[in-house]
Length: 330
Ligand code: UT7
Image (cartoon, rainbow, N blue to C red; front, top):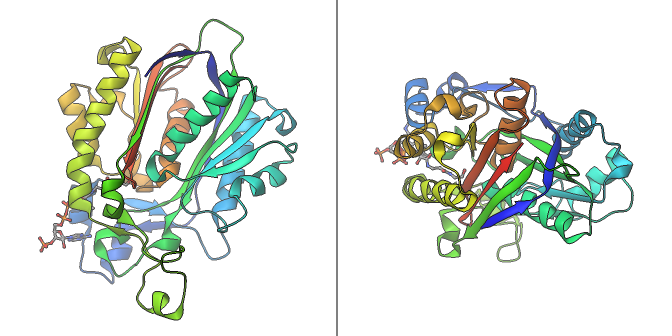
């Protein structure tokens, strides 16, 4: 959708666990090897939460850093949205825990579940709140700790996921410059069980049986998701460009969800976008679900790969299937 929202990113932050899990760690006990993992996914290592760590630590660390870099005090926030499919608890919302931890006022705080597209959905919701006038300054966190929902004997999923997240502080911009130029979000629930966790919800609540049958771990039909993701991501990016009235050559940096290096490469090849203008950190973090885009954006900004005035395009697809893109001028 074509937009011209005066909403700008004031600051970003990110946080990942210290514990590094390499491909060799999996090869030590699973029928897999470094070469397969690197060539099929691009992943060399990922971070996993240690015992005692959970979603909230990474969410709060990322949020604090984003606020610091934005030079915004937590008391200035009017809205907090946390995109996650691995919340601290089923209830209350992780966003409420973030609110208390950072010392924000009693403003709306809620979680949003759109898996790998979660950050894009949350960015959209926050931008709408800012434009609708119910918030001036918003904190958007994207964070996941999927290692807590991983079956480590399943080589098809165990090697993929990493933990961590990122955050952005958004504010209605006073100047003429920064703009959200287009947002596109969508979903297709017909593919709901291509990536899912079968138990733990109302359909099949936690019981000794669900634990024994390992039904609390993520299941993924990777091959099917792959086929859809390659096509949908390309369409999504093209739509974002068309809606924003810009060409791929004008994009300073593409920040794609880090699901598979081959997916990113294939999409970029079709779009004729050189990889030098694409953020890739899947080699170090694996797929961090809702955490991946804010983490990648934060790293890109720190590295000086993009800055004020640059056009940046973020795009993701994941469980749902749900997808989304945001085209913005920093
Ligand atoms: O972020 C949410 C969105 N998710 C995605 O976008 C994921 C998209 N899908 C993918 O990234 C890829 O499908 C995977 C990386 C998950 C899998 O790669 P693939 O090339 O699609 O492999 P495959 O599932 O088609 O499996 C090919 C073979 C199978 O063996 P057989 O049946 O041909 O004998 C698998 O059992 O590779 C085997 N395999 C492995 N071999 C070594 C699967 N995982 C592994 C492994 N090590 N870790």
